Amino acid sequence: MEEIISRKISAISPSSTLAITARVKQMKQQGIDVVNLGAGEPDFDTPYYIKEEAKKAIDEGFTKYTPVSGIKELKEAIGRKFKKDNNLGYSCQEILISCGAKHAIFNAILTLCNEGDEVILPSPYWVSYREMIKIAGAKPVIIKTTYEDDFKISPQQLQEAITPKTKLLILNTPSNPTGMVYTKDELLSLSNILVEKGIFCLSDEVYEKIIYDGEKHVSIASLGSKIKELTIVVNGVSKSYSMTGWRIGYAGGPKKIIQAMSNLQSHSTSNPTSISQKAALAALEGCQKAVEGMVKDFRERRDYIVERINSLRKLFCVKPKGAFYVFANISALLGRRFKDKVINDALSFSQFLLEEAKVAVIPGNAFGDSSYIRISYATSLENLRKGMERIEMFLDKIS
Ligand code: PLP
Image 1: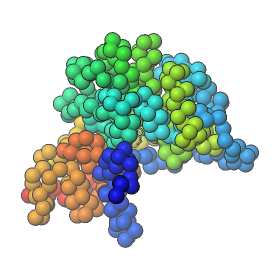
Image 2: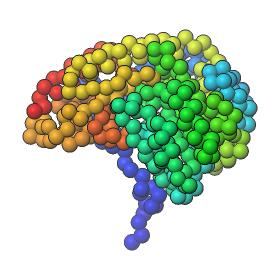
Image 3: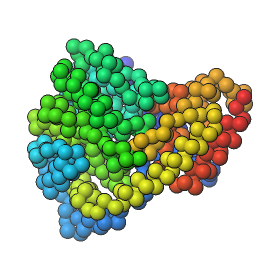
């Protein structure tokens, strides 16, 4: 009998976070007090003035199809944002609004990659890139980065990974899961290679606003007209404005590519939700104080969790410069025992931690490194304290 599921879709790896998330849900339904340090979204409510604009949009009947690539007012606001924050000039024809940054990334990868093309993906990586590359029929070429090199790829590593089949490099700064941030000089070195070889860059900048200690986010596209012609910058309102459920992301890039992405979008989702577009307009154009407030809270939590993890001795992590995750190394625990079971990798560690200590974290397997766990600090300090106390007690039981 012929297989029901297509070869392309069968090849997509099931998310290794899924088992943990499903179990957390089940435990919560059973009334078990689980501390969830796995969240990939800010725990704050969407700011009031943004919600008000959405309500107004509904009341005024702004509930019909919009142009596929988004409404003009929002594109203009995104254009102003690119200019102000990133020193990037994009016209409305060089901007596409999609159903979340994830959708913008999907459109870009599908638009650029042919069957057999190679896409360079620094690891640890956000889990969806790899699967999207595979869906496009392209091949992910992983460059492994480590704690020692601050989880950043070097120009030499990039040079070595390039072959005649290389089409695209995916960059994510600030990074999920490591929280590292590339400096302008580092980006310049990478951009020189991309320009020389004519390789495209997908720059995922969704954590741009969540950045600490005076660190400055730089968009690789802003480093010269040649690299701008090769780059698709992706951003969105999910993380910066705590709007994950509204599903608005966007891309800026060369007109020809943006138009082709828009063409693809026209045959899949059409426009992103009309009401959410009005809400995103309010987010981008409104007072930015709420963003500053969130970042201040994130910083306080980061300082707490990093100190606490590094005081445990059995775990260690770098201090993240952006986003809201710490990527903690668990190598010291691999091969050791919890009760009668061996801790083989981050997945088994995370499962034992959840069952025994009732703390949920995301195993690094999902991000390409199974000797790490990702702890999200997008939760209250109280929850973080509770979670860390439980983790500490759990570590004491490992022999
Ligand atoms: N890129 C990265 C690195 C992310 O972590 C996420 C969400 O977790 C996204 C993109 C997708 O964001 P959105 O909610 O806008 O689709």
